[in-house]
Amino acid sequence: MAIWQEISKNKRAFRVFIPLLLLYASSYFQRTALPGTIYKTISDEFSLNAFQMGTLAAAFVYPYALFQLVSGVLVDRFCGTRVVLTGGLVFLAGIFLFPLCSNLYLLYFARMLTGIGASTMYLSLVRETDRFFGRKNYAVMFGIAYCCGYGGGLMGSLPFERLCGIFSWRHVLLSAAGISALLYLAVFAGSKKISLPAIPKTPFSLKPFGYILRNPLNWLLFTCSNVTFCTYFIIQTVYGKKFLEDFAGFSSAEAASVIFTLTLVCMSTMLTTSFLTRLTGNRRRPLVRFACGLCAAASLLMTAAIHWHWNSWIFAVIYCMFAMAAGIPQIFSMVVQELNAKDIIAQSCAVSNMLGYMSVAVFSQLIGLLLDCFDTRVINGATVYSESAYQTLFVLMSAVTLSSFVISWKIPETRGHYLHLKANK
Image 1 (cartoon, rainbow, N blue to C red):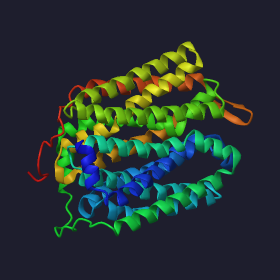
Image 2 (cartoon, rainbow, N blue to C red):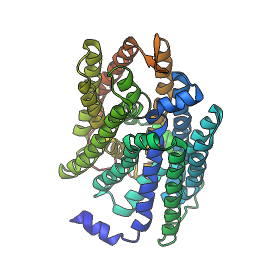
Image 3 (tube, rainbow, N blue to C red):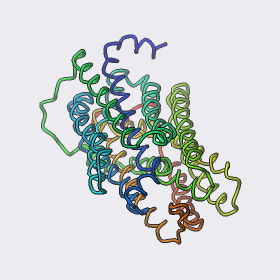
C-alpha cells in the first residue's frame, strides 16, 4: 500500500518520470540492436571482420563508460532531469546520424555520440527514482524502471531483426530515432510542470571519487557485478546471436528469437527480485550470491555443451540462465549505493557502470581478436567461426565467472541502509 500511496502523491512527477523512463528504454534499444542483431547485414555491407565489428560495439561502449563519471557528478549536482535535457540532444544526434552513414569511420563516430548521450540517462533515472519515491520503496520502483528500460533491449532483438527483414535497416533506425525525439520533447515539456531541485553553490570536487575508490568493499562488488553484467551484455548485443547461427545451427530468425526470449527472462527476473528483496526486509546479499553462482554455472554448462555437442535447444536454455543471472542488476546498483553515502549515489553508480562498460568494450574487442585467431569458413558469403574458437572463449569465461562467485561471499549485507551518511565523513 505504501508504494501506491507514494505514487499517488507524485502524479505530477510522473509527467517527467514516464517519458524519462521511455527515453532510457530507447537508449537500451540502441545498445542492444547494434551491432549484434544485424551483425551479418552490417558486416557484409561494410566488409567488416570480427575485430572491426567488436570495435563498432566498443565505439558506443567506451564513451558511454567514460562519460559515466562526468554524468555522475552532473546528476548529483544538477538533478537527472536537467542532465538528460542536455545529454539527450547528443544522443539524438548520434542515432539520427548512424543510419545515414556511408563508411566505417562515420559509423564509429555516430556510435560514439550515441554512447555519450546515452550515458546521462541511466544515472538520471537512478537519482530521480530516489528523489520521487524515497528509499523505502526504491527497490520496487527501481526494479520496475529497470524492467521498462530493458524493454527497449527486447525491441532491439527479434522485433528489430524482423523489421529489418521487411524494411531497410536504415529506415527502421531512422523511425526509432524519430520516436526518441518525441520522447525527448515529452521530457522537456514535463520538466516545465514540476519544480526541480535548487542547484548547490558549492564548487565541484573530485573528492567523492577518491572516497569511492578507497573503499575496499566497492571493489568486491564492482568485480561481481561487472562480470555478471559483461557476460550477459556481450552475449546479448555482440556475439551471442552469431554463435547460435555458427555452431548451434539456428537460422537468423531463430537466433533472434532466443535473444528476445533471454531479454524477457532478464526483465521477469528484475521484477521478481525487486519485490523479493522488499518482502525479505531489503536483504541484498542472497541475490548477489545467486547471480554470481548462476553465471558461473551457465558458463561451465556452455563449455560442456560445446565439447559434447549437446542438442541445440540446450544452448537456448543456458542463454536464459545467463539472462536470469543478469536480471539482478538493480540489486547490485542498490548495494553499491549503500556501501557508500547518500549524497553521492549517482557517482558511486557511475564508477560501477564505467568499469562495467569498459569491461564490455575491452572484452568485445578481445573476443573479436580471439575468434579471428582460429580458422574460419565462408558459408553462403558469411564468415563462420570454428568450434575450437567458441570452446576456448567459454573456458576462459568459466574461469572468470567462478572467481566472481568466490568473491561474492565477501560482500556484506546492507539491508537498505547506507554505511555512511556523508561522503566526506
